[in-house]
Image 1: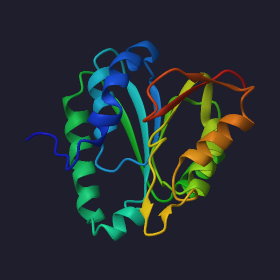
Image 2: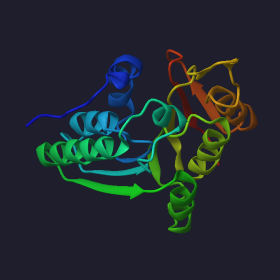
Image 3: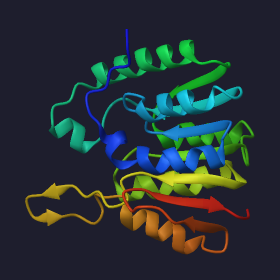
Length: 206
């Protein structure tokens, strides 16, 4: 049995950059907000578990965003594929992978990680959950507290926008929230040069 994905989003938007970046960063403690079918986590397990143990936390409600609901996507099937893919990736890993699946909305799950004293804990945080600007901003602000100094934060879908009958709604895309977060925290982070389908920042201070 092999990994099963119904799209190639990760291959298109991230893989080429991650092939260069991840071997330099070599994160051991990883948090992902928005896991969908697990493509990015399976990639990280394959790349990193050869050389050492990993601890990975995945947050997802598997209820889908507005765009998934309007497209009629079965989120139960998406979650089933995620769990199957992650199970296979962990089973095949050369070194142990400590997987934590937090099923729920990111506002609650992130607050719980803060309460569990995971501040300054993760080497890498990947934000790929809701595309609504307010949600993205919340995820970024709270997740930044969980990121170690010198850790890497990755924002997916930086230039993604949902096309509405009246055009593009600035509150229904991630970019305004990501820009606001970066501008407010410009003394605490450094933007990493990379193609703009994703935005990468390195935390330089608390």
